[in-house]
Structures are given as structure tokens and as C-alpha cells.
Amino acid sequence: MMEGIHCFTANYGRLSNRPETSCYVSAAWLPQENVIAPPLLEFNALWDTGATASVISQEVATKLELLPEGTAKVYHAQGSKLVSKYFVNLGLPNRVQVVGVEVLEGVLEGCDVLLGMDIINMGDFALTNLEGVTMLSFQMPSVHHIDFVKILEETERKED
Image (cartoon, rainbow, N blue to C red; front, top):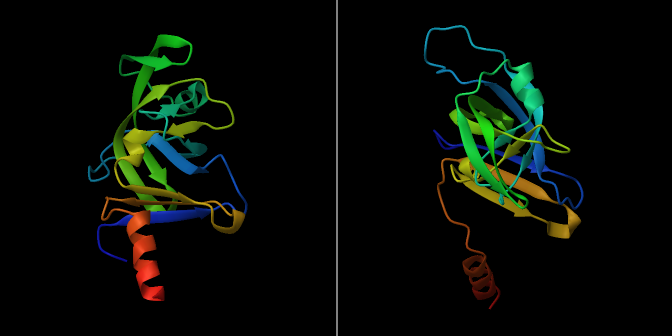
């Protein structure tokens, strides 16, 4: 594996319209500091390309004893509202780590953490559904583009 690149793939074994993975969350801290790390707890995360920011449930904030770092106005289908914001560290599958992420508190159904475009934009994200099996792949940092048109053209040239 290339140095400095962190990645993982989740295979759902079937077609899935809910790209979920495990996610570890702790209060924000700098790993290189010589301090005792805060608790890192495992939660269920939903990857959501329709969300601009990542969200944690009130239960996550309570379990981690997080203190709000202010508020943010969020917009949703029913309008807008002020919510608490926190800073956390995230641990994704295969030791992919994100330090010092601003997350918002929200009401989530079926998951504890919603990973939005703020996290997805830190790397390359792909969902594929070959033969009815959904796979999610993510790598940080971004190292290349995926161009399905170019791949198809190259495949057709090789077949000629």
C-alpha cells in the first residue's frame, strides 16, 4: 500500500441503499500530544452524500460527555434550526482517522453518526453495485479520479 494513503472497502453482500460502516468517535484531541486519550467508542455510521456536514446523535454526545462548542444553523426539508456543534476525532474502518472534525447534533434514525460531504470530500469515495452486491470504498487523501467513460473507452479499445 502507498505510504500516507489510508483506505477501506465495505462489502454488503447484497444490494444496499444504506451505505453504513462502523465509526469510532472520541472528543477531539491531538494524538501527537503527550496526553491520555479520551474514550473512543464505536457507533454505527451512515454515509450521506446529501449532507454537507457530519452529524452525531444526542446519545453519542452524552455517552462521550461532549460539551457544545457553540451552535450552528442547519437547513433541512422542514426549514432551519439552531443545533449544538462539537469537535470530535473519528476512526473509520481499517484505521482511517480524521482529527478535529466539527460535527453537528441532530436527530438520526437507524444510525448514530451521519458522515457527510465534509468527510467524503477529504478523499475518494465510490459505491458500486456489480451483480447486485453493493460495495463502498473510501481512501484518504484523494489520489486519482474515477472516470467511468474513460474506463469504458479503454476497455472497448482492448477488445478491438
